[in-house]
Length: 247
Ligand SMILES: [Zn+2]
Image (cartoon, rainbow, N blue to C red; front, side):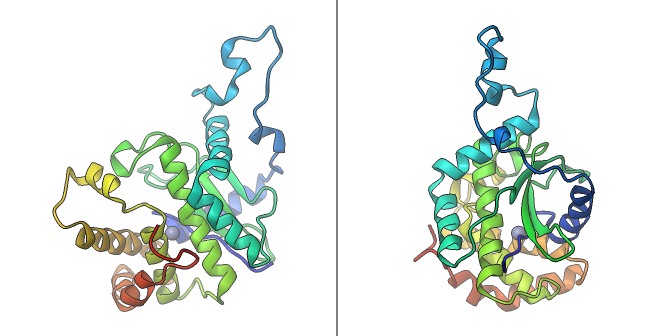
């Protein structure tokens, strides 16, 4: 199977670190965890509907992932695109986990989980619910983050991506930031309290967020990340596959 995942804000370095940790503590995702479990008739309301139990971030995250896979058109389209390429997502491919970056800016990741290069997606259960100021929270954050990581998976499936190359990584980050919805009008508005030129602002946002992600790649410096984003921006921003146009 030939696909890999990538990261988000904290992309590369973070994902590798997380991957090793998850690998050690790996517990096969219980499918029941992603299914609405109806509790016993004597349970409380909270136990009857554990997906609404905000005290359990993992359950809450897993429920949002399940909902995203079912209802988010963009996420479904990307999963179907991978299936059409002969790369259906294996069970356990998407997992919710506690992410330990200092500022809580990391909402997800894509990276290798196994010694033989299998890949996977992580959704950061502790940050998707609190980052109101940095691009939304809750279900929207999961929808956008999942779409972002699935675009990396799509790129990995369709091309021989060398994730140690700043330019390869930059191209995928540009596409992920542009197509996932991360730089949509409302999200940028929320970040900065309004803006003037929508198209220019979208491009600026994509460059900023792609540079941030590539900067986390241990194989390049911040200056190299900036240069790689600039060098690949035009071609990769215009590449909207598997969508006909920017959705
Ligand atoms: Zn990314």
